[in-house]
Image (cartoon, rainbow, N blue to C red; front, side, top):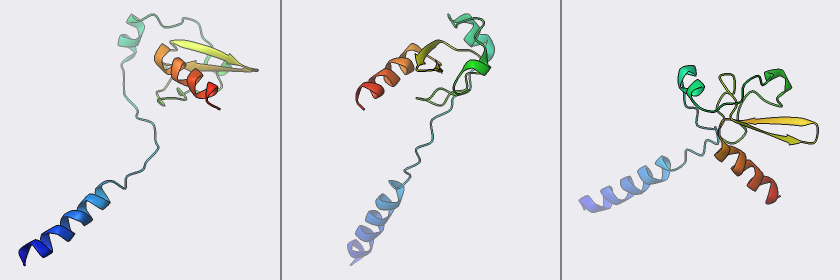
Length: 94
């Protein structure tokens, strides 16, 4: 009898724990000092970028831009070469 109550309870818990379908990008804070140690592009005018956030991971580009891609008349900034590669792959699959 006890199993008849436990099984539906576990099924309900599993159902509701997997429904978090948030598509928000993960944001990771990174101190500017750490970013400046890398090989970030100096002198990028943030006003020339299409967005102030990496379009793959959502990281802010205000502290530094690692790489860019020209797409038509838009300059797209990336926080890493991996995000640029993922964006290029996403464009190829369209």
